Amino acid sequence: MSEYRPSPRPTFDTAVAIRHEDVIRYTWGDDDSGEVLDWLYVSSAHVHQLIFGLPVGGSFRHSHEFRTIFAADEVLIVLEGCMIITHPVTGESCRVDTGEAVFFRRDTWHHAYAVGPEPLRVLEFFSPPPSAGSSGTYARSQPMLDDPRLADDARLGTYVPGTHDVTPSRFTVLAPRDRLWRLETADPSPAAVGLMASTEHITVGDLGLSSGQRTAWRTHDGDLCGYVAEGTLRLAVDGPEARRWLELRPGDGWYVPKGVPYRYHAHMGPTRAYFAVAPSYLSREEGMA
Image (tube, rainbow, N blue to C red; front, top):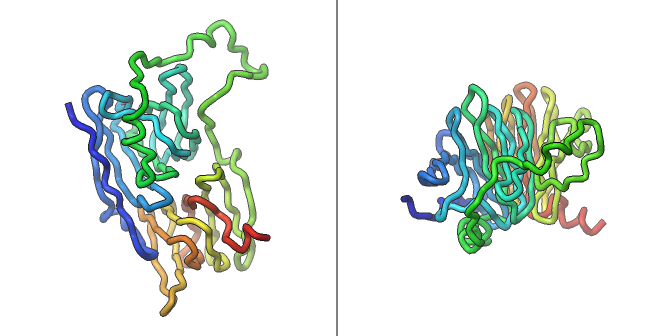
């Protein structure tokens, strides 16, 4: 049986482009939990970003060494394939298709299954991050779950479609229409930002820019990281000596430390990206307004 080992924690002192080919590859799990492939992009003092992958028919569950319950808010975004996520205590299960996301808060046991004909790839944002002791160390301090459930049998005989469902859910599945939409300053027109979750720990969303659109300079009172899903994104960063820009293509990520000014530019056509800011999306000045 494999023994638990903390995953690598890629950290950066300055704003960087994180090329897909340079991302740290890591495998965790054992025969009981299933093995999971991780592509680790960022693990700063405030935010954790990775992609995990499962083969067709693959899954991750939990074992004595690898317990999937963390002290963090998490957003999982399905990039490819289809995922069934299950709460092994209650049997609650949700289907999350490509382009959809699921959000859950700390102390939520979760298993994931790749269903359908394609491998599964999921982008994950996580805060508080492992450096805060929220992941493996915390999980291993929790009571072992010895009798996981695959389904919620209590719903049998009571599930009537179209009626009000009062059963509390630990998972919230988010299609694009479910995002909290906001407009942010950009040229020549405001940019649409869709927030999937915004808690005291983390804000996660997606950003779509039309060809030539450029956002205003801004900062956050938190670390920023992200992932380019479509198109080419130029990320301009202001520094003490000079401004510089990073060109990001699909599969690439980025990191901007707390308080560093930046802006986006779709200079080669339309682009779409996912991002997370932790702990606070607003800048200090905005937060005091």
